[in-house]
Length: 415
Image (cartoon, rainbow, N blue to C red; front, side, top):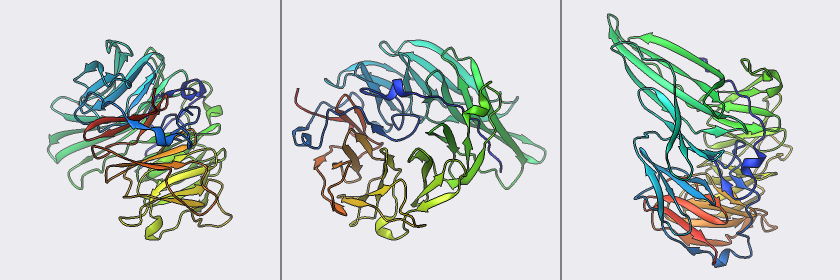
């Protein structure tokens, strides 16, 4: 089954600099590192206190936002709230889906899943509908259809949305099913910049396994799109200067999502391992060990030189920190580890020099991004959550935001 993506991204430094968490993973490089948000430091984490809980009963999705407003998606509702007071600013329902919205150019871009996918553009301050567009093929007469969108990614002057649509109709041979999927890029007026898609149709059994939604990441001047269990494609934007179809310049191994780990390599979570791959040739550079104490349990976060990967099982849970450049061998052990009280089910996030991990036993572990000079480091601090984490933490203006079953829990330094 072939699934080809077209990717062309440009820099988003203006988005990710400063105190904002504008999209899932903080930026299109998927580092989950708010590098310039340095309000919280290893020296002052002891002063963090619990703040007001955001105005939602539970918050399964990653929070995005800036100092002017924070945005949480719960099922079919997007809620804007004040991170200082926890008060609601606005709430818009009727927007089903699981993809994380993005904040860009004064608007909130919400991917919507339905019979046909769409993207809705909401006003940052009021939640008012500014624009919308529908994507994916038009279902045929008497067909049933279901379309799903992934996370919205912004790249400086356009938005990119992955989608997957399944359409079925009963015919003489049984159930005729078409699965179509792709990636589409719009400018800020919802004019199509470029797109790529593919589809396959089968009648009867066996059923078609659904295509998976890609993770899109920026690696230096190249980009990678990968979907769970499918081939990752490496793209060179120089081949797409005229907004034509972007053919991959290299193909990589099957992955479970891609995140950048350096200027010339990218690192993906492949099952329970980290795989580091050359961004030019897509050749495997190194991988993490396979023993149970170093089994990767959630997606990694990155700074410039290291990958921070939640690892281990109950009783041996830890944050494994790997040198993104490898160790000169095919298999590389962590440079250092930080003990965790329980398994982390979600990606860490980084604020300046502080790594933040939410664990399944309702704790928030804070660790130094730069280590402690030995192979085993103690946490800087461990905080207690009221609910069970449902998504990775976000950091906006030094305020830590954790989606949990109790709502959006916040931690901040004294005013």
